[in-house]
Image (cartoon, rainbow over all chains, first blue to last red; front, side, top):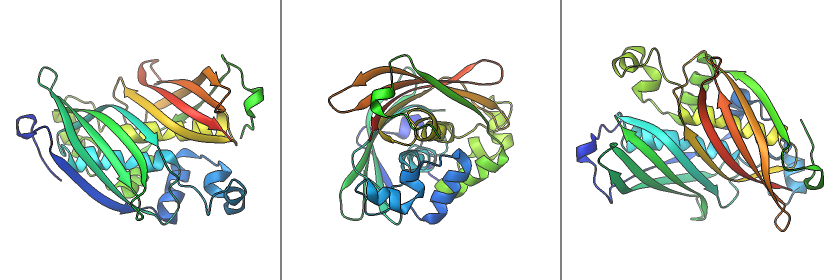
Length: 137
Length: 137
């Protein structure tokens, strides 16, 4: 876990990591949320909607923003204030995502950083963009 | 699960549900994300930061937006395009949240609805506000 204090953070700093979203994460997310929507839980239904397999819950993809802020950027002293997430392509079970954040702004008065995030899959397709306001406490 | 088609949805429609966030959901979310940040995982650390106990991961609170869209509003035909989430108060392990969404806009060209969401805890304190753009497919 990184432990960047506010003063050590500079605009332009980048941090990232990779994850593979498997059946296991899908099952746990379903157990948490009880989101039984068939697009995420029924292979045949997902196919009938033009997908090659079950679509990963968007908010499961977004869950990794927690890791980005809490472990990587800024790490230990993170407190997420707000998040804007845009899903730009479907994520499928088994996909490997690269999640990368860049500090684009610092607010010295409130000790808040703004981190822009891009997530790409194993085919380098952009699947999610996000912007996070994170307090460094 | 609701099965609202685009035509049956009207501006002003509301749907909601309640959840209690327990140790179990915290553990599963940690297993998914590997977000080991001490504010969420270490009672003493959370107290040292002025909290009465461990703070629920913000993105775990946000995970229930998946349920709101995928099960309640619109339900079956939901496809989340984008989400803006603002955390306005800490959520603690054991808190019971009421999550309520209201349709505030319809976009007939793209068959997208905009749903505003408010989450309050058992003390009627607002802990999260969100706005979701959801395709009805």
